[in-house]
Image 1 (tube, helix red, strand yellow):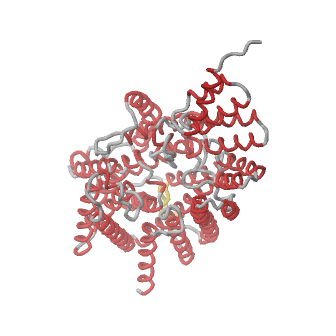
Image 2: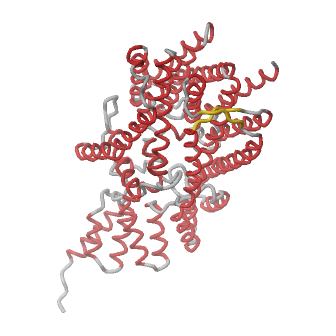
Amino acid sequence: MKRQFLFALFFGVGLFFSCLGFHSSALDQTLFPRWFFFGIFVLILTIAKLRTNPTIVWHNILYIPLIFLIWVMLSYTWAGNSTLFFAQLSKYLLIYMFALCLALLFFKSKDDFLKLFLRAITITALVVVTITLLEMFQLPDLSRKSLYLLKGINGHKNLISSFLYLCLIFTSYAFFWHSKNWKYLSGGVSVLIIALILMIQTRSAYLSLVLFISLFGISRINKLIMALRRINTFKASLIMTVSCLALLLIVLPYFSKNYIAKTSTRINTESLVETSTFSERLHIWENTFKLIKENPILGCGAGNWQINYIKYGLPKVYRIQDLNVTFQRPHNDFLWMFSEYGIVVFSLMIFLFFWLIINLIKLTAHNQSASVQILYSGLIGFLPIAFFSFSLERAEHNVLFCSLLVLSYFQIATHGRLQKGFNINIPKSIFVILIPTVFFSLFLILKNVQGEYFMRKIYVAMSNEDYEKVGLLGKSIDSKFYSLDPTTVPVDWYAGNAMASLKQYDEAYVLFLNALKAHPFSFHTLNDIGSASYAKGSIDSAIYYYQYAAQINPRYDDAKLNLVTVYMEQGDFEMAKQWNDLIYHNSPRRTKIKEQLDAHFNSPKLDH
């Protein structure tokens, strides 16, 4: 009993910190720190498996996650930025290990572990609800604009909503599965979650909530479910997969192109029905479609969407081109996976998702279990969130979503009529091999936490114009595992600017070249390497880099002003005037250059 109590305590605490942990030393206090807590949790779970002889019901469908993981590893050979690859790989390794350990715990302890698991999530959800409500009371009002100040424990109101939705699936499941006190607690938490999602006003969460509740209500109608008893799982899953591909490759690009042509993204008002953020997503998706078209089979490699999607030019969005707002993900988990891993692996993962849903529906047809109906209603309901957000970037979302998939498979394998399934003993030697893998993931995550720690200091040093300190801090970051800050600006770009400010132009030029290797399409880097080339007397190279920067961001005036200056110094006033006419924003530098151009073109011609 003591051992069981200690394990229950460890599991609850591990799950809690994996979902809610944070550390102030990182730039994003809830991203990599939370992945680190999750890694420690997975490491201890993996070591614990060395003391047992775990058994799992294996079905051929389980090869799909393994194929996906192998493909992610192989993408190192074609991923342009290896540091982004390693960061993403570390997350997938931990998710896979967690899924394996969780499945083994479900199959070994069954109801005893399920009870512990549901209670841990219910308590975690209650803490999130409490913290969020306390913060909401401090807001000036509950307008949509004020709600964007809401950070909660997830860092952003949309992430709070999507995490709460995943919690709702488990607390609702617990309500129908538990009895007495825990039943009432999970039911009360479920009601609070629904109320809070409605108050936070995240549209994708609204859609998911409506879909979840509607599907669950429909699933309680016995006649409709009974009609699905004879459905062919493979054919139904294949049809759904093909339909999903058609939506992403045909319907969505067509709709996006027509919608963008009719709308503007420079809208300052913000309301529940205002669509400027949706227009922004469509512009970002337009570039993602091009990226998919360019790399349909292999994809661009794990984690590399964020540097490749702008190779076609920054999306024509005011906040992106003028305000330097960056996107690390396309705000669509489907397009994100598709663009990074290609059509084959993406299709397999989507097939697995629909395979689970179809089997859960068939299971309900044989056994009218409300808890099972909660599972497939929740899975389907999650689709709008995945379609309009980036929830699967976050550790806490991955913990719950992965748990949802594992619990679904467990229900199918133990209560359904799983064909081609067989018991398999997992040898202890497997875990001996996998423990170093978890350590490797933790090492990669620590390198990113360390990188963000020094980047925070670099920002302060840059604002204080302490350029020598910037150079020293840049050398403290391990560039093999951390090369871009959270806004995808290369670390070496900061160090290069510092060296340029100290008039160490040769060193600055080398650093800018390194920055360009890390992010070949960073218009800031392209502009500054152009200036470094000009300082070295390489005029043609300078013009090339300035033009490339202006091509990536047509509203980036610094590169155009530099081009005007170069052409004027070269005596090519016609080209200088052409580039000057393309400048969007007024500035003292532009005014001075315009006066010089006007003076040249208005001066009387000399007779010879």
